[in-house]
Length: 229
Image (cartoon, rainbow, N blue to C red; front, side, top):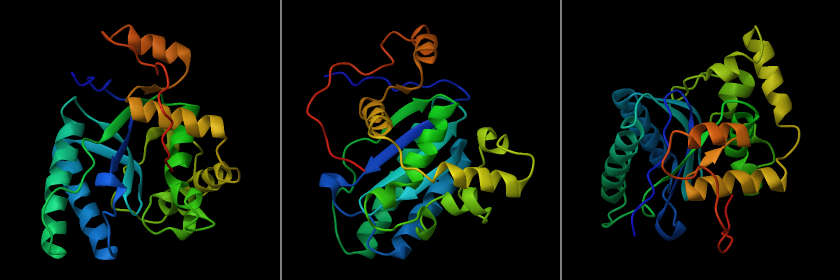
């Protein structure tokens, strides 16, 4: 079966999910997480991907990033994947693969859908019942956005910069986004578009993107529902 081509449009961010094989743990300790971020930052800089938002969970990773060209994302993820598996196998005296097939990636419109993606990614540990507040999770971009703490991984997106005129006001407005959880409709919409590697946006935006593509940019018929956070 031919793989669907990933949708790429210059200047638009992409929501990326990479899972461990069989949903097994990919980070056994904080050193693993640090090394993964090392590889991610180096690959993103080398291949021109700006990382705006991220979270490292036990068995998967979420990223929100903007590739500068069509090759930037695949080259970044390939580099991170190969280097991290090599490190992980050596550090933990194991062999074999680590990732569950290829990563998933969906294009995101830069409006309220982008806001929903920020919340979806940084609230992952809360939905997984690991913490009560996203600020308690050290392996995400939340503290950078909500409190202005330095984060070597994050390249701030213009959408975030446009929230307010000052850093303090931007952080304050960002924190307000997290007072309420995402609705089930919002959660399913993000999950579905990511699973099918389509477009997260309104119909007008999807029509605009589809006019440039030889394939649809919206979900088709649903299959069996998968569990995810």
